[in-house]
Length: 397
Image 1 (cartoon, rainbow, N blue to C red):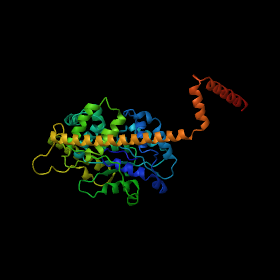
Image 2: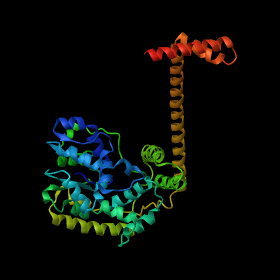
Image 3: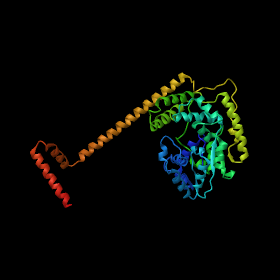
Image 4: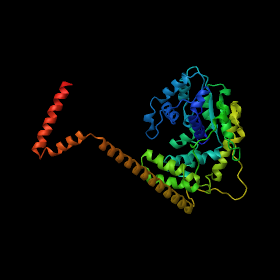
């Protein structure tokens, strides 16, 4: 059970597993999915979680997935990051649904100073309009009330997630994969995942187009402003296709020169203190750590003047440039879709022409009789004769 956390390489791992599911099955490893979002739907079903209407597609998905796992004689891998927020009751149901299988839990984690801005950006990419400072105020409030704070701590509070998922398991069956620091070898995180999941890292050749890349400050500010205009107007399916995937993931995230999201000094200090507490708690639990707990400790602040770029008050010239890039991208996509429409229309017209040419001579004569029957007595008599003959033929048959 790979249960999260979001923004720790989970999308990458899931895509590698999805693309290699047939070869994995040949090695005795089951990734039970007939569609790429099957584990997401199963997680929604397990936790009875609303998700923009998708929960209606999820009914029964967990039981179907668990049945496939029970019927497999080797290793099976279930993976989705929203599972991190499951309650102990939901965790118990999940583990019991696998019968007498030996269950291992895997959680991937990254330091809070990188996770907090990433989580706000994910909120923006899911249509939320909360400001950055509004988000920070909610998650730093000790009461942790409200949907936003509950979700954040449900998936990001590493000791609590591991306690909910691993309290009934031996510590050696609870695995914590830490995300390497910037500058580490590019494939190191994949190597860690592969080792704990029992995969041949080299053989799987993790070439994948599915990712969850980050945007810079002006780009994220732009998407939040777009949300303010399109929420309540643009259907979820269209938002996912055109705003999240086309603009955020495939266009705006490619702008590398923009300042990255960070934390203001006071919030950063709070996150560093909390991280130290977590590292101490995790060290006491004796979980299997793949990587190092030290990697959950935020890096020191670089020397020199503070470089925090506030996404609530971004550089407007940079936002305008990102907006122009977005407009060009949308125009190109509109032109592409128009070309596809024209091509399909031409194919349809050609098919109809061919169908018309293939109709028999008698069909064309009959159609002419029908047209002429109202104003031509001879045609009317001919049509009536045809219908009587056809009626007798049908009765004889």
